[in-house]
Length: 152
Image 1 (cartoon, rainbow, N blue to C red):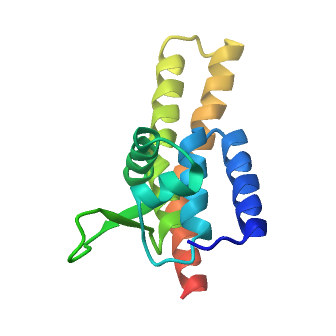
Image 2: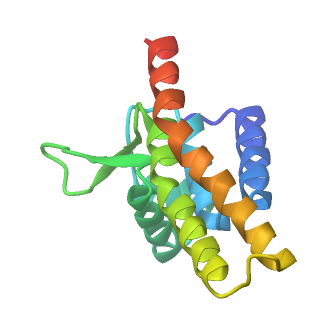
């Protein structure tokens, strides 16, 4: 990995922004490594070294980033270590995986609607919440299609 201090300061600033947006601290710092590295892939050990972090903390962050689809595991013939890289379609994949959050919000709103009276202000607020998330979920496919057309 490169040792340009200005880049790693920018990486740490990006990580802070991600943390403020709700991402776990080590996952944010690990993602920053993937974004700023000059290598085609990195190992957990290289990330731990760069971040001066424990192997366990980095392992957890990698698992988190793999789960949401931001990074992928690569075959590394001749290496006993696992290699990872940022997925080419990371951001679209992340956005698509957020559908589970939208579905959860829809279900929560529906559950609230079911137990409130139609004239109740809570019922109206929950109905608006449900309508918003239903609209958002319906827009995702065309939004991603436009993104793919633009990025090709």
